[in-house]
Image (cartoon, rainbow, N blue to C red; front, side):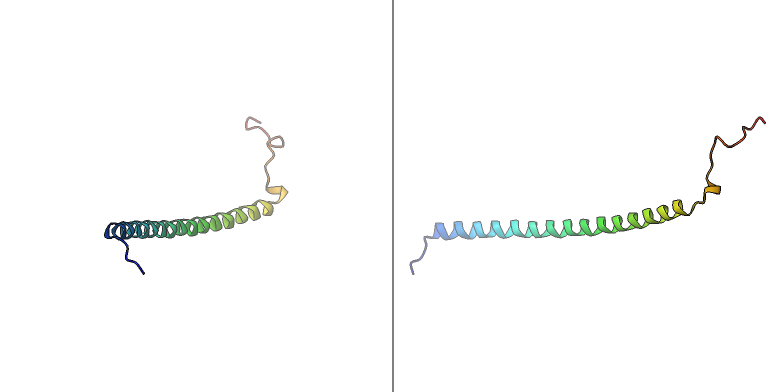
Length: 77
């Protein structure tokens, strides 16, 4: 096997180092994005639970408890 010239070896080493640095930053970014997705999913789960609770509360309101302003006597009577 023939040896590469020193300038080519140095260039390849520099390029490899650059690629490794970019890979490390990409991995950090992916980890940060994963944490963001996990956090947002937890928030979505919480909001869905709150929405279900509110929906149940609305369904539990009986017709007697609902206010119809047309049926109410004005305050001056």
